[in-house]
Length: 474
Image 1 (tube, one colour):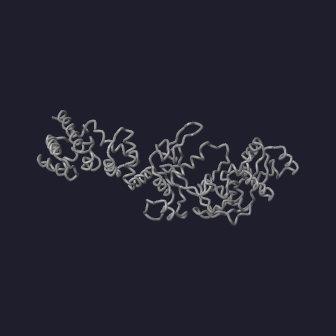
Image 2: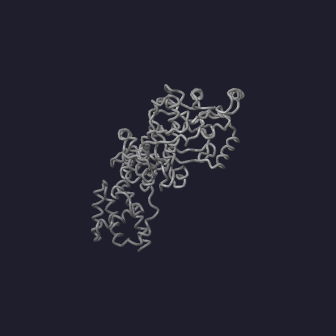
Image 3: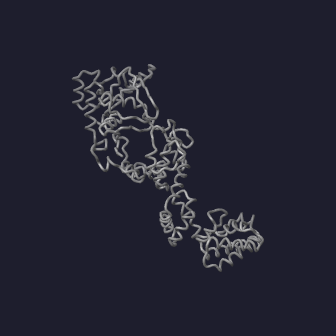
C-alpha cells in the first residue's frame, strides 16, 4: 500500500486534506507500507516536492521533439478558440491543426524562444500529439480501446507556475515507483491514450502499467454520478469521516460518526461494481483479497444503495462480542445517568443486538429497561383491553411477588396460570403484558425482557398500567 499525495494543482489545495486521508485509511484498518508517513525508497511522496524530477523529464521530451514551450497569453488562446468556433472546426482545441499558428517554440526562432525563457516570460510545456496515429490500449475492464490521435489535443505537461499536470506527474511517478496497475475512475479513460503516448515518448512502453478504469458510483436512483449533495439531500454520508470545510466551515457527515463499522463499510464498497461470481456477500478483508479480480468488475455504473450499507452494518454488529457492545452501551448509559451491573448489560445487548443497525441504537432500544413508559398505548388499550385481561394481570402480578428466582420459564408458567384462571390462553395475555411493561405492542422476546427488568420493576409497571386502565375503561 503506497500513499502518494497528488497535490500539484495548487489552486485546489485544501488545508487538512492530507491528514484527513491518512486518518480515514487508519480508521478503515488499511496500513500504509510506503509513502507519506513511513517514507520509502522513492521519496518524496508528495508530488509538490518532486518538481525537479518532473522538470527533468519535461525537458527530455522537448529535446526529443515530443514536447514544446508555448508562450500564448489567455487572450491569444481565447482568440484561437473563437476562430475555431466560427469556422465550424470539429476539434476546437490546441492541437495539430492549430499549433503552427500559435506562439510557441515550434513557430518562433530559437533565439526568440531563448530570449523569452531568459526574460522570465510565462509559458507552459505542451505535449506534441503525433498526427494520424491509431492509439490502442487494453483496459482490464473494458477490453481494447482505440483512439485516433486527431481526437487529442496538445495537453499541458508543465504549468506556468512550474508545477506538472496530472498527465506528466503520474506517468513519471508510476514508472519510477514501479507501479504495475493504474486503477482509476472511468472519467480518466479519455486521457489514457495520451498516457500511452507519454510512455512511448519517454521510452518506457515495455514497462507501462496495465490500465483498469472503474465504473462510476451512481445516485441511489441510478440517475447520474453520486455527489456529496446527494448524501446531504437524502440524509446519508458519502465521506469516510466527518469533514469540515476549512474555507466555509460547512460540515459533511462521515460514515464513522454515523456509526458504521470499518469492516462493514469495506465489504459494502467492495461489492459496488464488483461481484465474486457466487452468492456470498459477507467477506472479511482477507477473503476479499483472495476473491477479488479486476475481470469481475462491471463496465456499468454501480448504484449507491445506502439501505444495503445499513444491512452490512447490521450483519457485522451481530458478529461482535457481547462484551464490546456492552462497552458501548456502558458509555451511553453513563451519559444518560443510568447505572447497572455488567451482567445486566450483557443480557440487554444479547437480547437487542439483532434489532440494531448502529451502535448508538443500543440506548434507544435499551432505554425501556431504565425508564418506564409514560403511559400505556392508549389506542390499543381502548380497543383491546378487557375485564378478563385486567383480572389476569392482577393475579399475575400477585403471583410474581412471591417469586425470588425469576427465569423466562417461571414467567411463562405464571402467565399460563393467570390466563387459565380467566379462561384465557397465555397468548392472549402476551401483548397486554408487553403494553404494561414497555408501553408498546411489539418488541424483543417478552419473557427475556421481564427477567432483565426484574421482579419489582415488572410488578410496579403492571400495577401502574392496571390503575391507568381502571380509570380509563372501568
